[in-house]
Image (cartoon, rainbow, N blue to C red; front, side, top):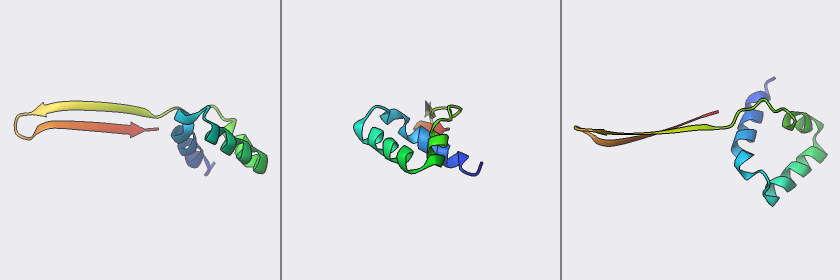
Length: 71
């Protein structure tokens, strides 16, 4: 299962482009050329990227904006 982190990163970084021609073509090529990739892509247990933004005003330092990203 060493491939799982790579698979998760690939899925979460491309999910926003599903349906775009370039990604559809790339996926078709990968499916055709690599049986292992076909099996990876069929896994649906990968969650999307979770993003959270927090803004806080501090008297001493001013506005602080934090953006977290995890998958």
